[in-house]
Length: 441
Image (cartoon, rainbow, N blue to C red; front, top):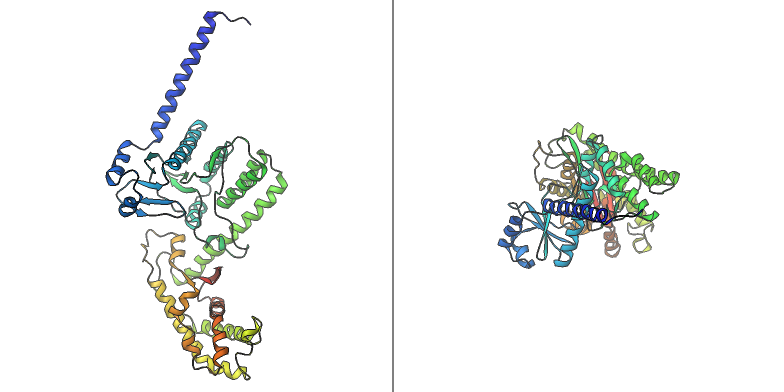
């Protein structure tokens, strides 16, 4: 169709008008997103725009990863020490995410306001917890409210992707070690705002716009989403199928992940709550604890079983025969010393519990109670809590086998906790890392 000069001029005028409107909208959007200049000025008044040393001296280091992150009580912002180039790159990513949220009209997703200041990225401070324990409590207590927020998150991720959304999954279905590994980290912060669920992004380093994604990337996103939102795995499965995944295969993978997460939650949170209820330690905690007589007896039995295994060479020939020719006599002579050792361990753990901060009963959550009732012991701390040599010194064992036996202190400590946990003196213990025990009281 022939276009006259007048029509062409009119189309050009409309095009230019649309560009002006679009440019004005983008400028307003970025202005709304950027932290006020006064915040940057407040920061510059504290330190120069490039002095990491001055920053470390005037702000508190709250880093939870390889990045250096700082804040202080009187500031309404956090500081990421990234270097000028990386700070600008991160700012652009955050602004792109903010713009996409606005374009899609999403009301449950949030990106902190930010501004680049020299080598640093300043972000509006938000109340958040990087611990998945607290995140899960918020989610499970308000899971119905999160349906809308998760639907919006899936809409957001249909146009973009986040790599490394959570830490790797740990543990088997019967052991909630995923909740024990630190830092338990996710790039989203879950909260409730005015009776609505909100999802705030506080780390978009691995986020990018992406209209086309590979199958492995989609699968990983679905796994990450199910890790954070296990009760919504059906919605997440439907999202993956729309993205091109095979439904049955995806359902199998996500179903297994959901089962693992829910088992972990039930074991570590719900089970721990049931353990504490008879002791009336749900909203305030006791200082210290004691092993029951039955627990000590059961612990002794488990220790003696392990000692006999060591003596028989089941853990290596270098300690074989360490209990001498009359094993039962040696164990009988050792028993008073082992009881003294158990008492020392009990006192040491009680002290570790009492040194934790006393929590405000009106503010603590299940995750905080769990944290307050947890002690972590590494092998090196054994010498401080209860060095076994002090208790084996008088035992009728040759010095060389005795020294070999000391190499099994950690194994014997695990045997002790196996015994006392069976008597419910403690709720649960795990071995989340080599030579590390975590005990839940």
